[in-house]
Amino acid sequence: MLRTLLPFLGACTLIAASPGPSTMLIVRQSLRSRRAGFLTVLGNETGVFVWGTVAALGLTALLAASEVAYDVMRVVGAVTLIGFGVRTLLDARRGKQQAGEGAGDGPQARAVRTGAASYRSGLLLNLANPKAAVFAMSFLPQFVPAGAPRLPAMIGLAALWAVFEVGYYGLYVWFVGRLQHVISRAAVRRRLEQVSGGVLLLLGVRMAVEG
Image 1 (cartoon, helix red, strand yellow):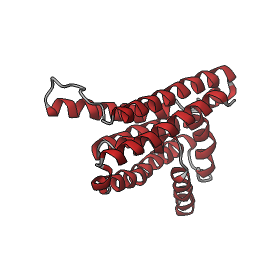
Image 2 (cartoon, rainbow, N blue to C red; image 1 turned 120 degrees about the vertical axis):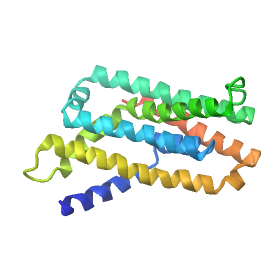
Image 3 (tube, rainbow, N blue to C red; image 1 turned 90 degrees about the horizontal axis):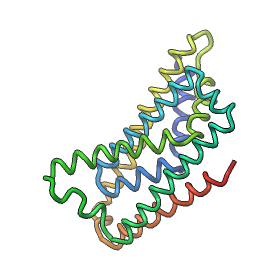
């Protein structure tokens, strides 16, 4: 088992370190607050576990085999990414984060709503990405120990993958939080919003046009 886990965690590190839509969204949300960033991480990793479980059940093979289903998910994912990107750029243009939302509510109500929205954004972005589903199907089976029951082993690996990435991306959230004294400057925050929004938009466009 140890000989399986060490290569698996090494592969998880390489996967998490590869820049992608989830990374950009986590950084974008962390610019708002550590809480928003961490809840986005939890939403994203819920999606990772869901896709891992679906892969263990063999259902992602249907997605990989069906060009129509894959293309539908690809378009949904592209629209989701473009939507996040456009909203981020609009926030940067206004120079404020979600200003005026819930002005009639108290701070606690706004925090709950913002937290739920952050979690949903991470979950939605992951579940709307067909590549995440196909990757889970090809990635997890490679690390199932010989002779181990396939279904529980893959679900266990999916859970470990998700927990590992919570810790890994949590470092991103922590690092952005440590830079708050710099990021709190309006010009710096606006520039970071523009960069993250532009990258999300470009990733969405690329997903839309690629086969």
